[in-house]
Image (cartoon, rainbow, N blue to C red; front, side):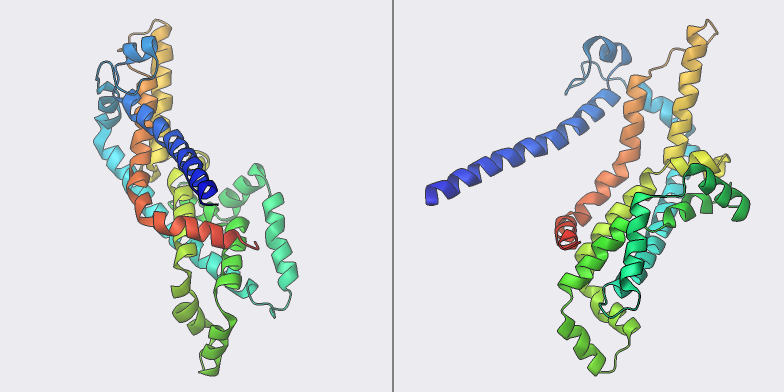
Length: 292
């Protein structure tokens, strides 16, 4: 029995090490490629150690430093505000749904689940946001469309409330005279840190990585998030390369290394923040998914 346990532990450790390598290797290749000279990259392909260090890609990207800083500012603002509002709305819907005596609970749950299967589509959404709510070319264009509640997040939070908040604790609070709002704020939320941290990470990543809403609804520089700004810069570089290939006068510039540098610049804040949520992430996902 002990031998089987040791064997299982060794095999598990080997599998986990391989999985960790699968996660780390792409990041190492990404950073290495972003600081490798374009000609070396084209001839030798991706390497763990750059054959010839060249920071030209970063020089191109950081040429317009003010726009980069403004893009980071917009992304941080949108991520913080959007995540807080989204999390508040998700909690306000998931908490009542966790109550077995809620009238119409099954219908509302089905309605939430239905949105996981079907949505209105791009054209109706565009017409609604631009012609009814008039959010085009405002900061709300980057926040409001993503406030549409994610059914997966609601179901996961409801499952966490149902399975991890003891009914006896809630009943005791009611006996002491606490209302639902006070129970939610003073008892339920402090006991739900794992699922809250998990959803902050998931929703925050969604806002940080979002560039589609900026592409559809924003064409003013001052509202470009860092992802939209980098995407526009890549498009401009591709146009200049095509013009150079067609014979127009243009300075040679890297393309592959710039794509890697763009990914590095966009991912750095996430890599910095993730370790602070890691200890809650696994527990929140596992426990929230149980009986989901």
